[in-house]
Image (cartoon, rainbow, N blue to C red; front, side, top):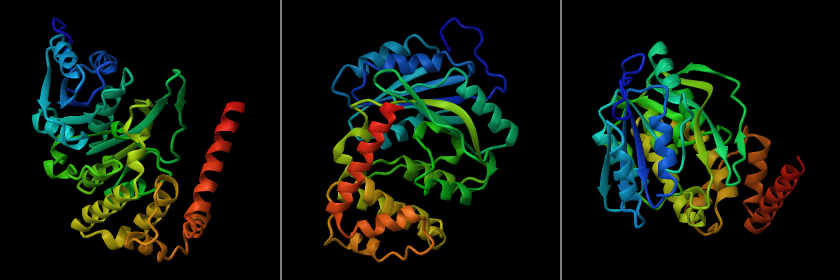
Length: 329
């Protein structure tokens, strides 16, 4: 990877494309880049996509690219993270691809582990675990899942539609030939697009591996999209579930997964929407959901959704109590 380094080829010979979308995170980019070039697996290309940054991210990316033998920078007008990932994918030449946010990092052996599992088990995609790194440097590495191993497409769709499934974008490592440019969402008025994009991916996969291996460091900062309040708007979530149903319906599987989508809708409305519109049709449809058979927590949230102010008070109190208990622990 580093110019002058003779150990360029990984153990299997498969090439991996690491795609890094960048927007105004110049101070974190060297840390991210270093985590890739220091991987134990060396047959890697790095594609950095500067998505119209207004800081010096573009210049930093260009400087970093000069230090590696297989790294490049794509500069484009700001179009959002989905468009940046799409641009990187179209440039990628690897057998496998992984998307890495510019303020995050990969553990030293992450790519080696993912390539070996994919080659050994003929996987289309690999999903591992992530470690959350807070501003003070402390780490929150959640425990593993009960089930490891190879699963099919339908089971992975159910995982992605389960609010309890621990997930972030970089945990996914997949074959490049399973991707298509149409999988990336064009609508920017969404709370996020990671799950939607991965739904498109796994619906086209046959063999997916889930392993209790730490393969991604997620740095939680004040600049993260997930910490920005505008992504909690009601209209964004309404668009989100419209897109989700469209993606699943295109594969003819919406009836099969409608109850999973409905459960997730209730969870999102309860915990992540700040301006519930009780007169809107989406809200009315959610409230018509038959919640028989749903977990007790979801059934309770469904009842509380009838009084959004009471629900919000309950949610905020619950979050406050969790913070207090975590500090005491």
